[in-house]
Length: 309
Image 1 (cartoon, rainbow, N blue to C red):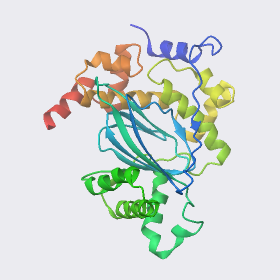
Image 2: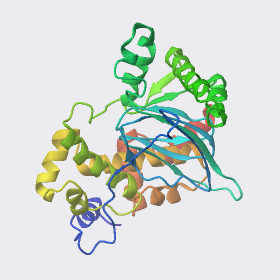
Image 3: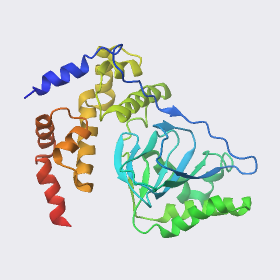
């Protein structure tokens, strides 16, 4: 049985020049609105969502029409499925990754993107806009709307089909107003480590998080992560611990354990398979790490949820 620390040492000292891993950077997406509207509405139908971990200055409201997989918002990861409705703040990195592809089933979504001042610089500062203004401020943490979303869904689905641009604008404002009034929501990225950082530091940490998001299920290299931040490995370790209050390996392990937890509850895959698919290359290491983090074995964790159903 391989020793945990030997495995970690081998992974972290891997020569990045020989590694086949690429340094994944959060893509800056350039978004242009059509000439006759001040915001962008798009409907997507594809086999799987392929957009990489990316960010943009526009707010984004995304409704999943079909498909399932993992949603990444900042440092938060969670399963998504049909009727997943999320509002994202400006420059908050994110992506939806399709999993468990079903033959002949498309992944579908409606995505609405608008610039903070698309209605004018001070529009959302008006007293009538207080509730929407607060909603947009809260979106910096990523907001997922729960419960019955049918009243929002109908409006959102209508937006791509609406030909009258004035009615489309009113429909968007009505939707934002309704979302601002609902109490049934959760913040996704509660501990937004990037919120108070200078822009240059946000960009640097975003690159590291993007590397983790794209690679945590495979081999992870400290050299690659340090290169993404344009730092030496030693300086990077100190920097990452200072900013995130956890080591780089702890951050990677968090993603792996979170992924495993979701797979244990939402799939019937064997525990060993889930351990490998979560990025652990030694099953005994997976069991040990899982139990250290949750004080319960992976199988007991799964059985606990089965009993509650």
